Length: 523
Figure 1 (tube, one colour):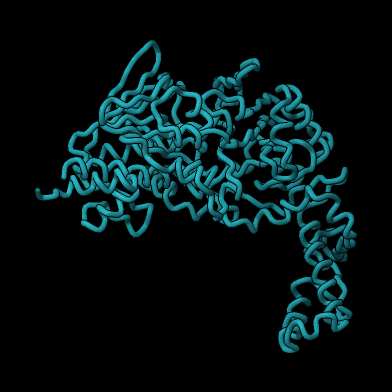
Figure 2 (cartoon, rainbow, N blue to C red):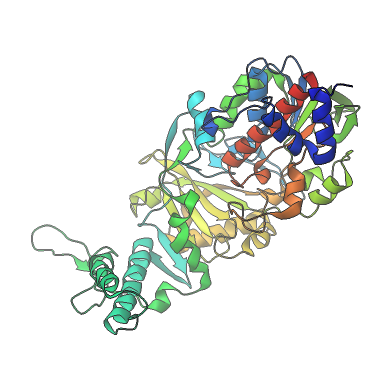
């Protein structure tokens, strides 16, 4: 009996799973080629041929999936548990309600035009896919100021300007290296010519004098600013090492701007971080059903049946793209394999917390701080100054972005505080950074993502970190595998974890699997 391509693929899939079947399809010329640039992703037009797909979740992964599937000819239904789209890409505006499990609801009362980005704070310029969707749908972008040398660092009870900390640390370390070279401590370790080149470089790099000592020349700030006529500037004296490294908590701020996905230029959508999600939503709005929490995920022959609210509704489809986090998915009744159920358990999710206040823009008028971050070893960890509408009368100050930046125990600790305690910690921090100005903070709200229904965390934390490149082991590999007609997506299934980029990239991978299944069934 002749072996058809479909029978061959089914046999390969039975033995090696869908991943093996997909590789076989590539060899047979049946798979979808990956675009040269991921931002140019597109399924073949009409390839859906009317097949139905139900998508669980209307965050970035779900919306991207819906858009790409619809334009390829699939019939799409998106089920979203909340009364809004965007998932964790959430910008809070006047009148919005903030629900946290076990806590009183909050109601935002910001002035018209102001907003608080409760989820993602910025977009790296290297995130080509999410920026590609912004470009495609006309979402305006502006610079997000991620580093500001004029902002304060509050560590060990002392506040110093970032420029003084960074420049003095550079100078002190440069002086140490120069001393080691001059004392011939590195002879034999590095060639003579290389040592001479490094020693020459250290003079301008670390502001060293002719004796190899760090001599502040103004890059770290001035005790007296240069003025008109005879007012010559006077550099600040150098800080001692104990002042530059008062605790391990200060390490991350020194490294922050060198992290791959924190390097300039950073961007943000004009009008709020949720603008990209809403732009994609406009392309698929008729297919999205809000207030439809999933109550069970079932197989129905070679199709899928989703049970959901309100009431006991059911949606059947040929395929399912599930974008729910592992922490949520493990609690939903399902027909998954034992291996999948086991893999869903124990994925750690970050209980990040953010706090926002409205205030007159005293940080600009008093301290000439236009965007950027302040850092602290207090429980609120950092402060984000708004990067938009410079010179306006009022703005929203992010007075806490607690994610373990300066102390890995902070997220759980801060999440355990009540709303008023969170706000009080932030007021004290702002008072330290801007004496006498904490009284100007008003309309404060906090979002503890671990307590937000249908999120219960801001993102998955894999052992090598959300953006690490190490192997993630069998648990992660299992989560990538389809369950029959059900495929999975979300930032947790990417090496761009905790970013909208990772959500979109994982959606693209999931859609390749859907299209491969559809093509195999038609072969």
